[in-house]
Length: 268
Image (cartoon, rainbow, N blue to C red; front, side):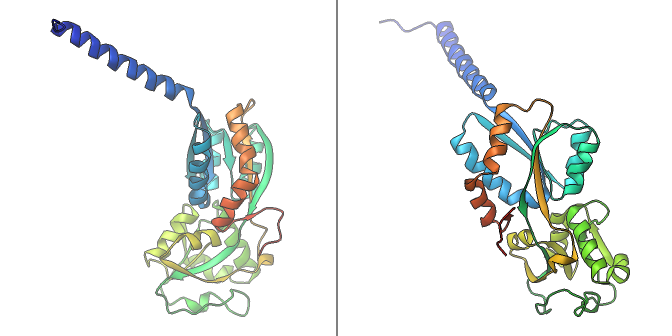
């Protein structure tokens, strides 16, 4: 049998390549993308949830975007293609609503705690930050306290509420190392650039480079809640399904593993 002419081989190879490219393009088009704009403190839990969801929903591609709740809220208000917004406080969800952004199926999914942290090799002993144990007394001259910026970052807003409640705001406000989000505040303590920091307990648990000294009294700040909502006038089915899954028992188990408390429970 005679061998095919070189031109015929080339046509065959080109045909195979074209078919493969077409199949890849078709597969990519078939996967529905769901863009989730979420608070930075949700990064680890959401990455785990996205991985689990996509294993059983191969036709869906979850695309998470993480930053301070204020930052992602402003991005959404400016037209970012968000399908879901997952905030670390009520303020920025309310703000989005006030901007005229269509929100639906809104609910509080999670609760969190406010923790005082130090580098893992710190000599500071554990204590409960309260009126009898002032933070300022633990800071040497020139030391700063790492927090999310209290002007807009939810963790910093809660921290500011607590410091005011405990009578420490005036002494500590000039000594704050204000970070763009709670994970940036965590990083300042991890690197030893700040001897103390205020973050969520979930952030503290996620790091091997810090230790938790204590938790702020729950009544010293507003309840730390994480509301979620669909974004847009006409949410598609993929976004709606993922939103509902996040509120279910399987997702709740993952959130618990990362230290979050599902809203409406009595866990400590």
